[in-house]
Image 1 (tube, rainbow, N blue to C red):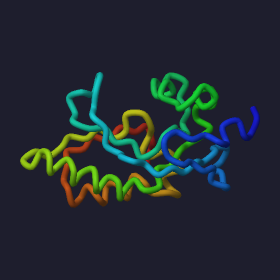
Image 2 (cartoon, one colour):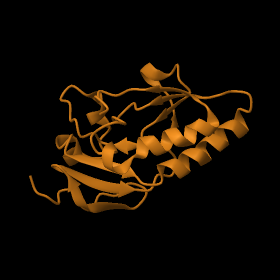
Image 3 (cartoon, helix red, strand yellow):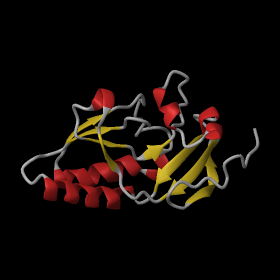
Length: 152
């Protein structure tokens, strides 16, 4: 497959291809506009979802998250790319402040990660999940973390 098949990928906010790779994984970086989303479907019992990354290095063939890939080529290359939400911790703080203004007497229930793995191998380098957990220490939401990682 061509190396630059989605080099110019852009969806809403500027995305850049990070020059380094992590193993065979292409790493993209993006600034998120928001990081908390309403929980729907089979996880509607939660208030919100939180995904620190888009894509997943594990690339499980049975994973439903491939359907949420930004385009056809990226869907075909599931497991070979990850988009890092560089400003995730800052945006989470703003999103939680907004939640508490609208819901002053309710701690949100958050399902992390509905379409990625928060502890995929790249977490060891970028520490996005860790930075999000540090923000949550102050805001104290109820949190469920889904991972298949052995978390070394």
